[in-house]
Image (cartoon, rainbow, N blue to C red; front, side):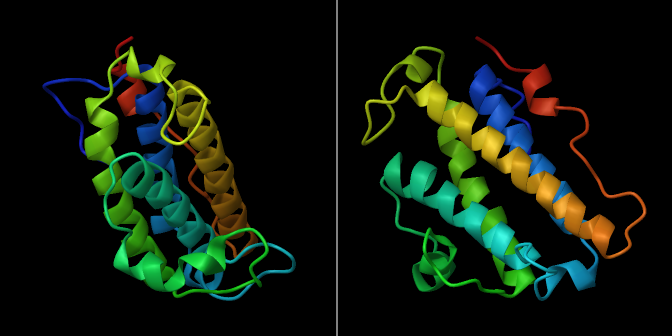
Amino acid sequence: MIGLNESRPPTRLAALLLDAYDAVLATARKLPAPGQGGAIGRLNTGGWVIGHLADQQDRTWNVGAQGLDADPWLTEHGAAFRTGAEPSAPVFADALATFERVTARARLYLDALDASAVEAPASGSDEPLGVRLARHAAHLFVHAGELASLASLVGQPDAPLPGPLAHSKRSRG
């Protein structure tokens, strides 16, 4: 789980995104080795799912919103996770380590948001930041479900699903 900021809880939508990060991490960390490798039928590989999420989160919250440099692994591999790319099976452990780094950097930005920020336009868009936060959270929860499906298909008897939403319980306006 991403650490809780005890001194200042995040806004509700930022908290939901942090809870989605936790759901992806919990599911990914329990994905059995067969689900981490090659594709199962037409499903995405576990490594691709995690890499795709890392790329999206890095481009949106770290590069786009904070002006940071892209994660080095994504600088090399990020194009493989975007629309129109050929299916790929990146090394799961590398993708997971990248997701952990990316979300730790994004957390700094997300924790600093206040209620007025979610009504303002998101960087590079007319879309309100709150809408972008909600869309990203939904997208992450969908892929957490995809990882849980992969886990089930490779024989894990109790694929983890999102549990208590620790960040959302503590959120503010």
